[in-house]
Image (tube, rainbow, N blue to C red; front, side, top):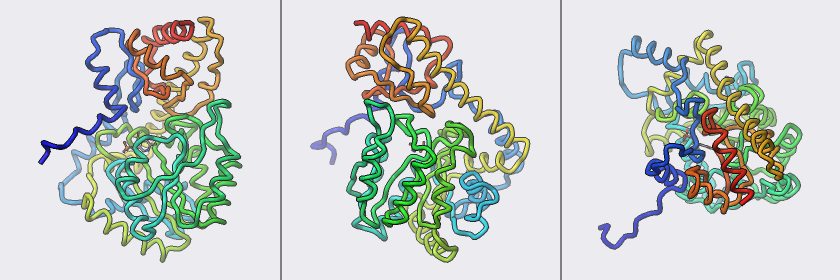
Length: 398
Ligand SMILES: Cc1ncc(COP(=O)(O)O)c(C=O)c1O
């Protein structure tokens, strides 16, 4: 069957990691991959998760299937993170949450669910966006449309063009938006800009699909959910894909959630019934371990506090490396202004380095950066930062 079929191209980012692994240069640096690294260059298991896992192992009595939407307590815990414990959405049962295999599983579940009832709907994604967004929605049968987002000149959001485009999105279409720490640019909408987007969504009747993969990596768990709260307060239909890969460090446990919000408890119950059918024919029911570990943390005051501290630790480390990179380039006499890297949020930085420079850094210095110039700032450590600053300064002068 496969004789006549051409091999598929390697995933751009994972392909870069393969090349990195093969590189024999002991000083090599991987700034491509999208996982958090500590200053020792490892992706740690959070202490709160280690404790929760021990607790789980001691108390677990079965490996029986979870219900299709997962453990109800997990859904409730996720909703508190999304909306705040005393939210009206929670009190009035306007939200339903399903435990999904990672944020990717949540995105695909949502894509399939919405497709079922709006088969002609397009999905609108930011230019640029996380590459897998297009892959997931294309696989679910959507036509993709783009909305303007990143302004390479100002290093900010093309706000006016964005608003103009959103004003023209037809009712029923899906608009995918990053809640915080936009991947790959690190540039987010702020307070009143979100108010305007919510107002347009409500007026035009398109469906907001919020991708929330970095809650806590911007400012805090509470501040980072501000946009979600604004959509919730508008009383409209929207959905959220949460990933706990980054903020709980649960990458390989495939831990995420898909949350549906509607104007009423009745509509939410209907939506949930269909979401369950979507899940049943896809992965049947979620993998338990990661979600139950996260739930154990969320349900225990001491572990929760520890988690908040550990998320703050990851966030602060990334911010510190942003500053070191920018200051390091200034100290080396680089004239180009990179100060915007300090303002970007989350793990990624659209560095502004051209594809030529990115290639030069790989070939000459074994520094691996994704084409387009996205840097995983968490890949910088106190050991490699000087090497990286020297290399970028040399590349720019060359
Ligand atoms: C913007 C965005 N959405 C979703 C995801 C998916 O997360 P997960 O690994 O939990 O599937 C990622 C992961 O990198 C991401 O960057």
